[in-house]
Image (tube, rainbow, N blue to C red):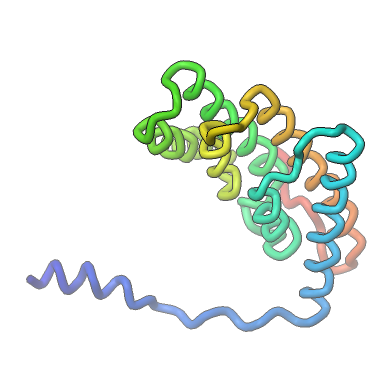
Length: 172
């Protein structure tokens, strides 16, 4: 019973929620996120390919609002999308898209990102996209990489316009 109490006791949290960022920081996050998704939208129109993937919105949160996070660094963004999309496409090719394949693909993508030091939370959705009905798995990898590189490029521009910010913290 004591172990059960300790287990549930960990769920109450030990810290207060962070304070709201300064309006200046919020405005820069807005500019970056808008510019990043705007650039991908423009690429989508030019290429005539569906490039607006939902995980890119979450990537914008990391690159423009949590810039110092390990999850926001170029290695994690690009590598995470590459690894996770490959896991999804390979799983689909070899095993189909049954529920157990979908479940194991997400778990495998997480483990593969950890093994390769490319953990990027939004990229964890790539196996779900690869295995979703109607998805063109052949275009998923190039779309994911084009979006990742675009967001990193916009992140380099927008984040480094600020005097008090340097992005990225590391590349490799």
